[in-house]
Figure: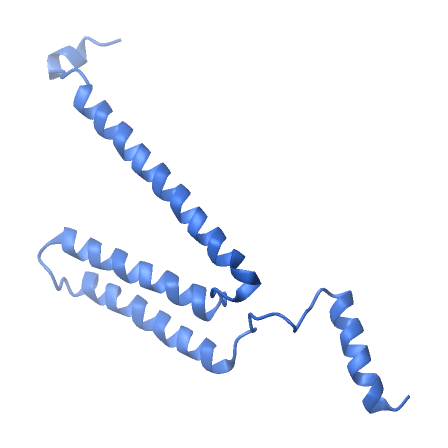
Length: 135
C-alpha cells in the first residue's frame, strides 16, 4: 500500500480510536471565527468597564441593566464563536439542552423571587424595641 493510500485509512483509524469525527455538522471553527469572538469579547467587556469607571449615567440601576445586557450578549458570542453552538450541531440537541436549562433557571428564579416577595409581604412588622426583646 502506498503512503498516500495509507494516510486516509490511518487518519480514520486515529479518529475512531480517539473519538474524533469529522463527519458531523458542527465545525471546529476557524481562526476568523475565533478572532471575531475575541474582538467582540474585548469590546463587550470594555464598554461596561467604561460605563462604570467613567460614571457615564447618573442612575446606577440603568448602568446595572446595561451591564447585564452586555453580559447576555457576550454569553451568546461565546456560545457561537467558541462553543460552536448552532441548530445543526449534534442534531440540534445542544441548543435544545440550552433552552431546557434556561427554562429551568427561569422557573427557579421566578419561584425564588415569588417566595421572597410573599415572605416579605406577609411577615409581621417589628419595631426595634420588639427586636431587642427577642431571644
